[in-house]
Length: 219
Image (cartoon, rainbow, N blue to C red; front, top):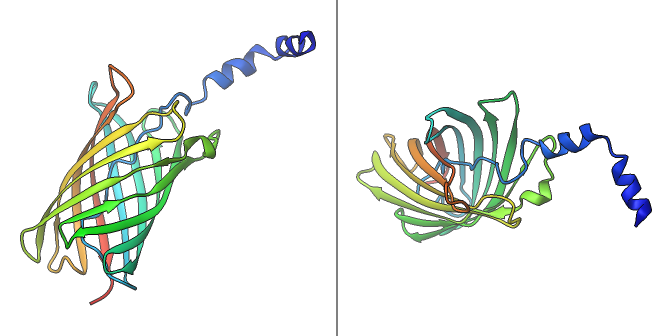
């Protein structure tokens, strides 16, 4: 025990300070805010591809927090199921740094073209990030009101549930529209979102705004 304490005392103070100041410690990962899709399914053997951008502003000071850029790929496993891969980059506004987020999981159609469930497993990765410490699931409900073949209204609710209790649990709510001459083929999806951390009294919260282009193959 004395030998151990002796080694601890010899650790340079600068190393201790640097470790305590890691930019991604203590639950401060920003949530992936945009859903970038509606409740429609692509159908068995068909493919969904989407590219998106989203911005995040802190609600208290109304200052830019981050820009998020990414892509989503989905493959139809059946008429009411898909497997989706999502990758995005989160660039922090207040420092020349950022990190990535990746998720993989199924999407299930509950009501045709109107209600769907997402259950992705995801994690953050990047410099100074222990990937295994950021494992989480992000179940989401997607709702769509098909107004016509060219216009729809979308709403969503999602919870980011980390396995590590040191990370924030986020609730993310989204609202947007989709428009295109043929929504079954492709769509432009502008979206706004509100994200709030559920772990604190004076909770962190963010307002998001974004745009996605999604393309679907098939009949």
